[in-house]
Length: 182
Image (cartoon, rainbow, N blue to C red; front, top):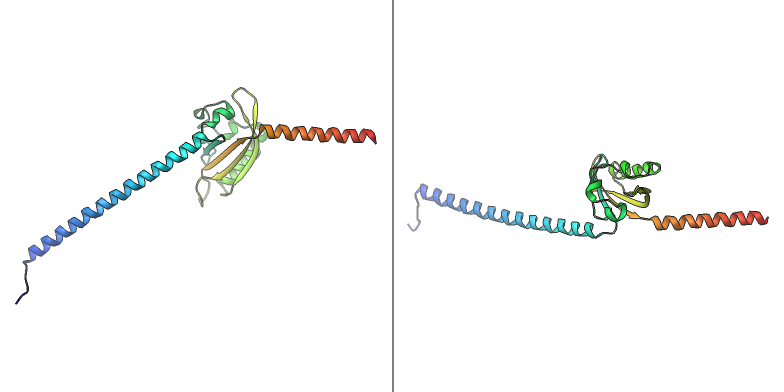
């Protein structure tokens, strides 16, 4: 008879050793995958931070209750404030009183309805004047249920508003001149 027969304890020992080797290999592969995921997440975070730091537009993140949880460095150019100075504040503290309803509607559109929202409004500059801006909001997470965080990109439109006002005044002057001729 050419069959080898091993005692049961040897078969169990070899099986246990094989299982141990397999467990070590699985743990090593999982650790490698975790390291790769951590590296990719760090690279992604660094890229987003780079983009936010170098954007001319103000990028903010708002909690569902409206508090600003992140503000990009463009806060200084747009509002004369450091990002830390507006972090923790609500938009209501920074917006001209007449524009609060438009700002609130844009936030609600994004936070509660999960759709993009936008508003033209005035933000308070550190020195007291107001800056015309266009704020575009989006939900921070796609497909979220209920109120959620918002990401807003805010651009200075002061010059465009001044041109718009000049056109309105020129139109009104032309209409007045036509009425005077009649």
